[in-house]
Image (cartoon, rainbow, N blue to C red; front, side):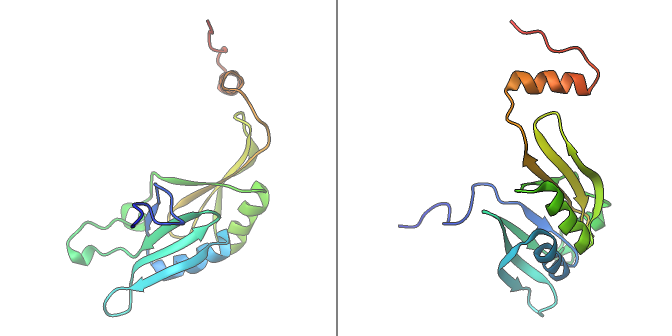
Length: 161
């Protein structure tokens, strides 16, 4: 019997359009510890039609941009940025962020202990995608997070029944 969700995949899989995809794959292997699981080249062998990386227990799909097939350009470089942040929970936020920086990413937010209980930092990769690294450092209730958020934003704590 065919499984509707293949083994090793989750229901949501990010699919990144990135230029040039082959260089991005190499970067993600170095920067994120990704494991390349598949790479299919487009006819002509110059562009990646489909690639799959495994990062921890999750998969990420990648491909080159193909505006020559009639669609609009979709890579962050072509669009002038991306509104998406890819969030990775890792055992050591600082070490994971530094590994990405050592591979060529730029820090957009240094690792910081955040009000919601995570140590958290972000980088921009050389291809226009943003990656966040987080390590849970404190378990908090919803009320504790709400109170801490109000404090962080200089507001009074929320009213509670």
